[in-house]
Length: 367
Ligand SMILES: [Zn+2]
Ligand SMILES: [Zn+2]
Image 1: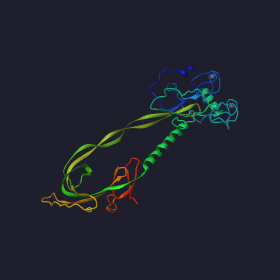
Image 2: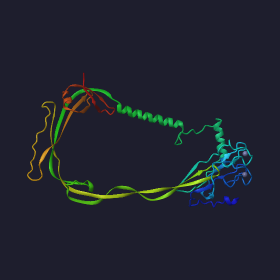
Image 3: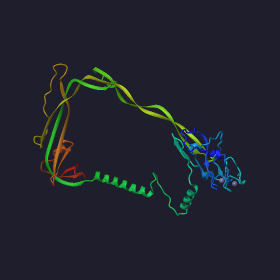
Image 4: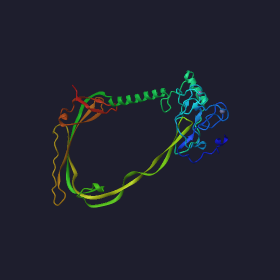
């Protein structure tokens, strides 16, 4: 018997391969430890029947492989005497009772090994566990009643409450508006026109994006990004209790990846293009004179380059408001017609955000 319990006391550096191994169990009657789930259906010391409750996964050094183990299912517990029987049996080997109504033995579930080894067994204090479970059942002790992450339901309620309060505060801050009134301090406007010219322009881009009419091109290799490359693989294992005194070690091959740089051709070149050369602007305060577009003269080309043309136009209309308490706010309006409704000194009302800034969408002439 002692052969099976031989342990050198050092954790093996090598992991056992995938396969079927014996669960271990302790005898609750005589205290014999590390009995084998398949080999020892009874305690070799005192003869007591194996109790599936007392099974556990062995440490790596205590793993005993099972050759040609035929798995027929988790053990069935005899409804008459409580003895675990192979799922293949119809009658209890101990007392002869019919096993049809026998419950299936509870398993110890799974244990993840990952890339390491099983450093210790999963033995637990069955007597203590059963005592606690019984006390919780009759209400003497409170269960941990956890809701995830090891936090109690009470903690979750508090966290949920705080989150709700924060969300409510954010919504309040965003939507908060305070009524304010004031007068128009002044009206401002600005109108700009972009002037484009035709020139040779420097450009740079990846090889495939260089324009077809580019010239003076020069390219060199440069890192464009990274790619995920498989560089190898490793095994990750887990042990699954089969409920019949054995467990299966399952190992999966997991690919290892690395980010590697990807290179491509980056080119600098010259192209002849129209582009913004300068801007002409007209600006003023008040409605008199009315806003107008700036005047300009376009250059004409003497050679291939230098010709000018008009580009895009832009106009800005601003109402500056002086609040009754002296604070000033600037509101940019969408179009001139809207802006023209305001006059210097006119009374206006508007709403202020929680930061004190104006919500210009609410600006209107006071009635
Ligand atoms: Zn025993
Ligand atoms: Zn029985």
